[in-house]
Every structure is written in C-alpha cells, then in structure tokens.
Amino acid sequence: MRLFTYIIIVIVAASIVAGFFIVGSPKEERLRRFDEQRIQNLQNLQGEIINFWMNKGKLPGNLSDLKNDITGFYPPLDPENGTQYIYEVIEPEKFKLCATFNIPSLSQEERLGFPQNVKIARPYPAGDYYNQNWDHGMGYVCFERTIDKDIYKPGLIDKPLR
Image (cartoon, rainbow, N blue to C red; front, side, top):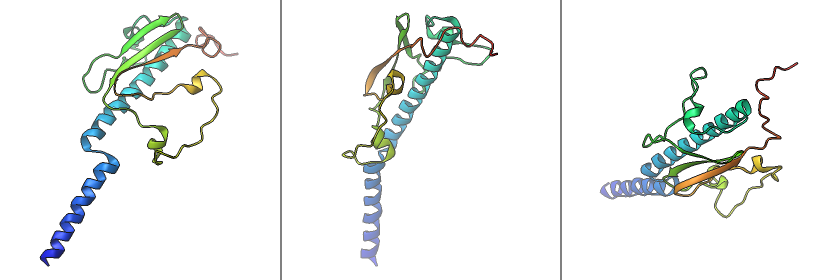
C-alpha cells in the first residue's frame, strides 16, 4: 500500500512538472497576459490614430490628442506599470507606437498549438495593411505604421452619405 502511495505521488508530481513545460509557469503566463494586453492597447491606439487622421487630415501630435470625452476614449496605459505608451510622428503619414514587452510573442503556429517544425499556409499579402503584424521580441519594441491615403481618406468620415 505504501508503494502504491509513493507511485501516485510521483505520477502527480511528474504531471505538474510536465504541465509547466507544456503550458508554461504561472509567472510566464502572467507576463504573457500583460504583453497580450499591451498589444490590444496598441491596436486600439492605432485605430484611434487612423480615425484622427480621417477626421482631421493629419496625425495627432501626441497621444493626449486622442482623448475624447464624447466617445469616452482615453489613451490606455501600460497594464503592468501604468506608464504611457510611446508614440512618435516620423513623417506626415508615418508614425510609430512603442512598448516594452516581458517575453517574445508566440508565432502563429505556436498560438494555434502546432509543433515548431510545422508551418501553416498563409494567404499572399495583398498590400502593406495585410502584412502588418504585432509579433515582438523581449524588451523595447516599436511598430512603424504608414497611413495609406488611398485607403484612409481624410475628411471621408464627416461627409454625409447620399
């Protein structure tokens, strides 16, 4: 009976250790959740920057310009330390958004649960906007974006549809 108990303890302990290797430690998952929230925040900021561009025909000077009491949008802060994201206008139609990440992002294959040596088919990109991604390494990473004036036409939002 004692031997059976020891075997069960070893099996349970081995399962827990194997779980950490497969899923990751709770600390790593917590860091990954912070990074995923950062990406969501940067995506929201990018959307608001594009809306600003379409309404005003120019990029905002800083993230505070995106604050809108009517829609209730306030630029999000970093979920881990409460700091503001870095935004910089590079050219009249080009900007970058930056954040500091805890761990590298997972590849699309890893996110879908495929082994690392298996590659999945991807559609051929039809333009720069289809090719944008939010993959990142660890540490400070910037994402450069260019407004395509043929896709995002300034002033189009304010014109009534007829």
